[in-house]
Length: 629
Ligand code: ATP
Ligand code: MG
Image 1 (spheres, rainbow, N blue to C red):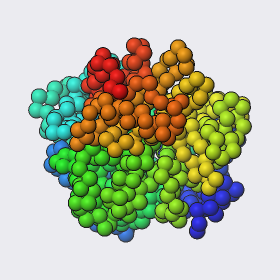
Image 2 (image 1 turned 135 degrees about the vertical axis):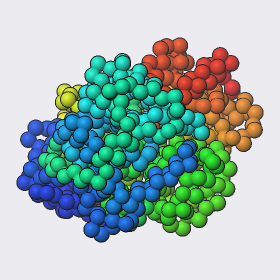
Image 3 (image 1 turned 30 degrees about the vertical axis):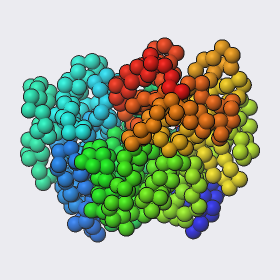
Image 4 (image 1 turned 180 degrees about the vertical axis):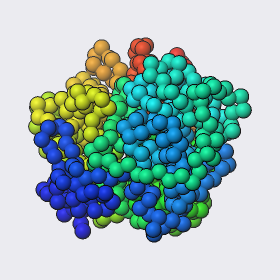
């Protein structure tokens, strides 16, 4: 079927469309009502149907693919590779579930999982899903305070953690962070289940509270735990947003709608059929990790490749070597990670045999054209930008090679995904913009299956955060977008990332794109800074490629010229600072608000999601030195 018909049907006949898609998963009892929208902006999909995420991801495949690999957990940090078949996955998940049950975890209880990209993270998630417990995975790189905030919001009965993670060959103890988080927290769980990796010999244990997973695993080996069938709309898991724009929100997901969205998107968007290998470089702690390292590929009967380590260690070819070794069909990563690789020698892109690799999907941040071209040329594989949010759980704007690949257009993630009723509207009047006119990207309710159902225990925040920006009841993405005559949508940045220069509204993304066309530039961040005359002026912070030996003054001036050439003199950056690192969230997103605060000598705000505090010092030093142009 062609994309146009598929999409049209999902909008014109949503109930028929999603009833059809629902056949992709196993239902214990079929749904009575496909869509209930009696209380907008809330909606319920597949009402009355009962199913289970773990059953669909594991049990269902035993008949046909028990010996096939379900999961490969590959670590270049510890040197440990675990290859887990569906049969083994079934065993591990059941044992984990038995341990959870023995600790009193039951349906509806929250379990916080604070683990790096190791196989146990996947086992733990699926074990929770099996017994109807609600997992809340917290990215392992978050520090104690972030963990404590999430614990207090979810009020878990159990925390699952590890002794340590590793990054770039260095052991990063987790346990001291766990202990600090629990003493800061107002709702510390009774037990901490420790997956001891043997990385931190000095690890302290709290008698009575801390339990050893290996010990409990041995005691519960071989036990099978029956699946807890859940009504489609019961909560499956919580996941907090990255916190790029402020306090993270606890995104709540359902069971049936999510399972259907995972089955459909893995097949039709990511083109993954049963038996094929999907490699997502995401951390399990992010939305991509939940959907395309765990639930999507496993519900789809595929093999998921999970990676712990840096993209440049032992060398910048490691990800492509893994593609070759495991015959990866679809790879999924982020523009940020690709820009790290782009600083390195291009020859790494062609050093491995990539004949199995069909698609490279990238999401999370705008994909700049130079990076997209660099990858397409170097890999000989189509690069597919796709746009989504933690809230949506799966791509909202993308191309769908599993269905019918429409032409790629650099700079645009493509077309609306099935079920998304998208409009681009004027921020003030709420009126739909004609093509080529920038506006706010909104979704008309009902949101499709898979998207958030609410904010955890805070329906009011769900409504006020997402549906209260316009007179009409519309989900605001809080991103700027523009649509071309073919319906392709381009994201122009966040609604709070707009610079107003002498009455001209400029998106930071447009300016960053222009700067990235300079071939010495690795990455650029643009912020608006107060200017008495013009209101605001753009200021640039940029990193250069590793081999760029050019004079900073010359490059900085050339960057200004790139902007003038592409956007006009009005957009000319007032200052250009060349730095060694840019401040990013742990999920790899540029923290423009902290840059802006530093330059205006204001409080940089909540920096708890910051990846590398050194990047801020870098910026401070650059500001003291003065601009480079
Ligand atoms: P918070 O909502 O807490 O501030 P966040 O928005 O960074 O955090 P995520 O849900 O991880 O949390 O990120 C979603 C955002 O990432 C989108 O709203 C958009 O701004 C950006 N984004 C994701 N994919 C793309 C893409 N392909 N092109 C452009 N921007 C993208
Ligand atoms: Mg957001």
